[in-house]
Image: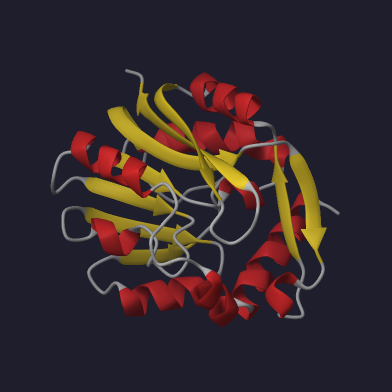
Length: 208
């Protein structure tokens, strides 16, 4: 499967299973304590990007009272739902590895449960793109895989569609984040509320 086909599977999968995903997801986001830590470090009223925002409920809705929030997701249906659910945010459809934003546009970037759907061969590029749009001294909060894996589920959430995942082990993902230009200050392993696995959450500051 090519990387473009991989993207198509993820995009179409989230379009189709939007209802089932919303029902399965815990309303309290995994890594909530790190989101609180992120908010303590990013000044109020700053521009923040929710990359891979989904329907906006996980992070954007919790950030809009304090920040100028932009959300981006590969799924048109998820962007539609985020626009309806979080009217004070600005949501666009796009690709995490080719963000349609200016260099240094954001003081902070959060990315929950989205990098795991990007082909892992592109993760170095992905994190460099995150570093490009975050201003020097700004902050990143990203979840990654906690153990190396690449594969698919042909009937994800019993929705009749395939979903794909691709990520390295936790140490490699952290190294890629740091190589991209972030100084990681916190790394937590958090259980997956939708399964038996776990995610690594990394909180880091963009180097000048």
